[in-house]
Length: 219
Image 1 (cartoon, one colour):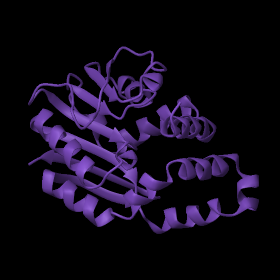
Image 2 (cartoon, rainbow, N blue to C red):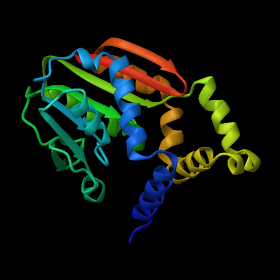
Image 3 (cartoon, one colour):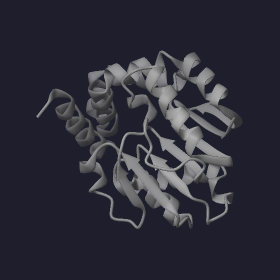
């Protein structure tokens, strides 16, 4: 097994301690409702990018969406999903969909795992624009260098705090296993925002509690 695969498995184990699937589904539902996704037509064709275990797809199904698909590079993670959505083992830089075929593409915590910025991000955004129909929507929720996140990082560096909180300890492990891409992402906030605005007309932008929430339409 290669080192990157080892790191991925360790990250997934830490994530399972950080948040159960049920907790993740509830979190995703609350987030999607805040971003107005619950107001979309229920027959919208929606794709979850970097969908992993598929809990974002479960949340969307619980909100009433039926035309759901997911994309992730990990067949191991996709095997943990047991819903009705059709899922593809594929690279989000080369999406397996026809042009102008989808109403919405959503990514929750996948972009900060990209290896190379800005090249990989440009490819994902270009593919997203290609696949979206006119008037479609792109939703992204990702870590963001807010004061709250900096405070959490300081806590993660304190062994005493980690002993007191299993959730904090799991988060610290996750950060360590994805350190290179995670820090690369947080250090490129201006670049990321410029790319988002270049590819998509913003409809909602907010930054709070260590997260960026972005909703936009393809330009």
